[in-house]
Image (cartoon, rainbow, N blue to C red; front, side, top):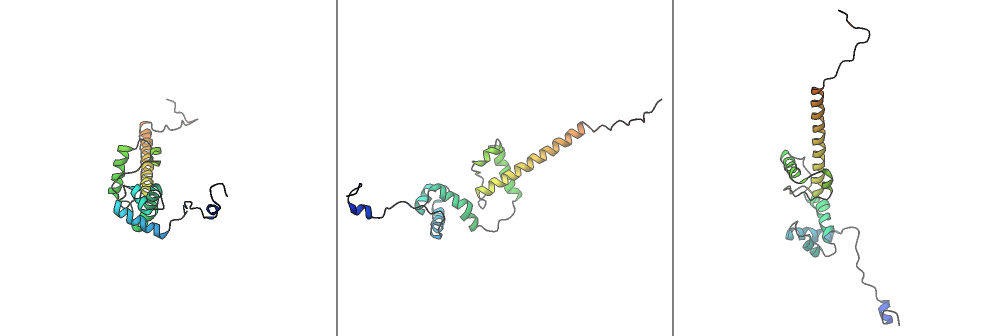
Length: 157
């Protein structure tokens, strides 16, 4: 007799949870249906409906892989989208380091969190460069360059 009970129990295959590394087409189909049913807010229920993944995995798969595949052919960012991101940044972003973990909750249905974050970082870098250029221009107007003294060409009166 084995340590865990009868000898038969040792011969039975163990029912260990298997976590596949790659998503299967069936899991993606379940994910799409679950997101349609529960929307993009209740990831715990979406995960329950998928059955083989947790809420974090479902949200990551949806926002980074499946949703962009459903809405292919990304168009360039519009001025309206940029304005929404600027307004969000003014209200919620103290510095760029907070963007790493922040959920950018802006009404841009065909843009993923990753796309929103990258666009906001791009815009922030553009803003900083523009501010630096303006500061340099103000500085040069306030302190015009002084012509170097002409050595040996002094005018005597």
